[in-house]
Length: 227
Ligand code: CA
Image 1 (spheres, rainbow, N blue to C red):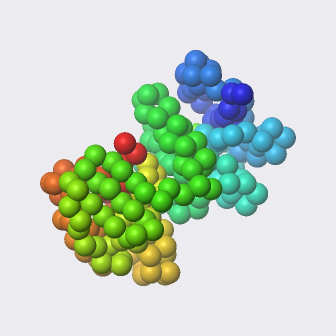
Image 2 (cartoon, rainbow, N blue to C red):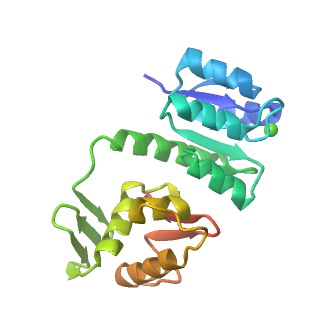
Image 3 (cartoon, protein in one colour):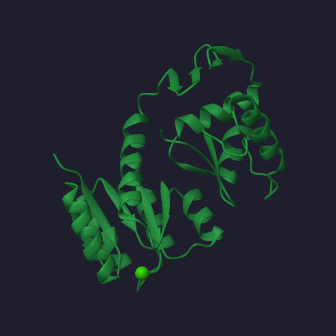
């Protein structure tokens, strides 16, 4: 059965472009041009994913995000011309799965949609082991192999790696990571997170300047590569 995507967007040119591309990829598309209409369509149609514009003519996209999140865990991808860090961080902290900045490539958007669907289906059955290129992790045994050689991670580094892998393909904000690892978010001071991330990278990456596994999203956080 094909998946239904609710597009909340007021720009007709973008609606046309997205509708055609999504339908070509066998998604069903329904469309709302205002925030209020978007929320009511969400309630009546139960879509499998939401693409949400931030700048809407009535209520703000941030408000739509909050309202949908109160009632549903549906994947929500923000597609917005606003590229300020503050807005990205806000959206990701408030439950958006991903954030795509306009102008965007359709290929990239489709890839992000696939990732969002994959991470929601994986959420209920966590993998006990993980393998990508030369990195192997056994979560039960707390064992990490790089090129078949065991490496030692501190408990915090291990938790960091596990959190990133469990959310691979998704951008995790500094604040989200801090809350997940340390249980609190220490006022925009991400220095200790940066330090742990640097030592983790030195242990698992060949070249820390061009990381293969953990990508820095400047000003926002980190993302473990999806493949
Ligand atoms: Ca708009």
